[in-house]
Length: 222
Image (cartoon, rainbow, N blue to C red; front, side, top):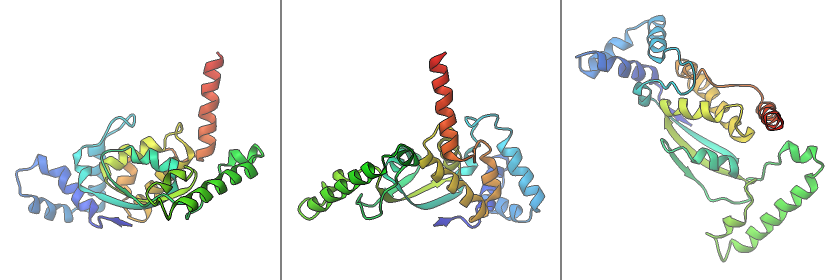
């Protein structure tokens, strides 16, 4: 919902700053005169090879900020909430945004049982909300959706989105990470920042998680 429109200028200025004795404003002026090829080459050189996702780009990426408005199931929110280097705020958990029923529930023929459990959760919330508005959220299943905002810089984005898009991750938060990566590159137009996240896997979240579980099961059986 919000991003730095001059992100690339800020990033390049921050990259050059510790290697110069000029004031930041003069560096920024020089950056604005660079051609597209020179700008991209400088950012790529700064990022380096990054053989694995633990090789983090430098602090210049902290000059670029993003803000997202997210609607996901409460379980995915709890995983995204664990990251400390960001600002996160959320609305009250209610049944009002509906819930997410995993495909595995359908595959197991348990859709009716699952839906019944969600209905009972919503009914208990409705019975509690007037007299106990703060406590009523505890009656809401983690499958129900919650709306929340996340704000973080590009350096944290690289760490968080690469981690949360990994093949071992849950499909729910993998979708969030992959969509954020897409929006950074396409909607914000920050292609150099998106390119720096070169350890993101865009394969189907459900299939990757299934394959990871199969490999784990194979190791346990060997």
